[in-house]
Image (tube, one colour):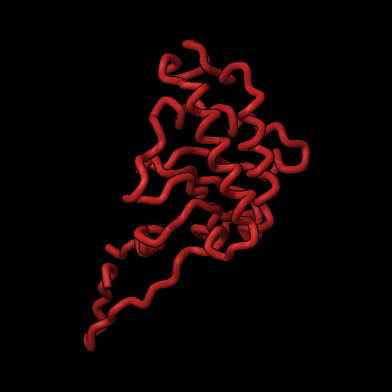
Amino acid sequence: MDLIPSFSVDHRAIVPGIFTSRVDTVENGTVTTYDVRLMRPNIEPVVDVAAMHSLEHIIATYLRNDPDWKDEVIYWGPMGCLTGFYLILKGNRPSREIYDLLLRAFRSVETCQSVPGATAKNCGYYRMHNLDMAKWYAARFADHLAANADKPETFEYPKTERLVTEDGQHFYDS
């Protein structure tokens, strides 16, 4: 099997930021998957599971209610590695163009008094939420975005040279 593009990025060099992970052509146009990375993979501890769950609920609710973006949002959800989220939007915009939206979304967590949909009726495991920690992670990420908005590494995956043998074999850890 071919290595999927998101696994061919050198995770040792990824910093918190907003990255275009992939662009796909679909029946009605284009959709873009963004890698919204809160933590440095394999360097910083992952996001606390309960806080990640709360951030999923809060930011999904925010994005799907934003008057300018709600019709563009297809998906917001956590990465399996718990270092960030995936955002899938209709269209194909550079990651810098969704900076303001995501900064507002993460800043909105600060004013939350409760986690939307955190009931037995609305959530698959409503007991696993941590609003206080979600606020801490959201503020940390928003502050990082604000402080690093002028840096290319906040919006562009790290580029590395890949060793290719004479017979065309790629080495992804080179």
